[in-house]
Image (tube, rainbow, N blue to C red):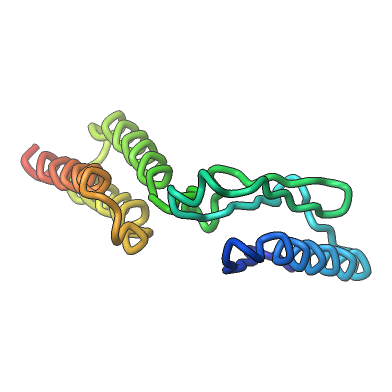
Length: 168
């Protein structure tokens, strides 16, 4: 199975249009090669994101990418390998998504807690922390303190939950 996960361009503000034309040409050529090999590029799952600084984001011209007959405009957030990237690379969307997901799973663990022994519950909570919190924490490097505090609170909540499990 062929899967194009991402294509990235790093350009300065003066060459945005020429870079978009080159990217469009490349993707359309890939699409035609895939068609020859009886594969299909799913236009509905194709996303474009333009990452800029907050200052340049306001000055950014309208960017559109045309693939076949579909015109794709940049999204505020895109998901790649389970990580949510926003157009300012501030990781706010990822931290919000992660907080929501971890809270959801902790509530579900709370519902089944009485059916689990101490070791199993402890392993489930630690697995949640490893699979959710530790998976993308390196991408949070450079995020502001308030956002990192939210992640730290989730880690402490997991630790507290493990500690309560061991006491009960």
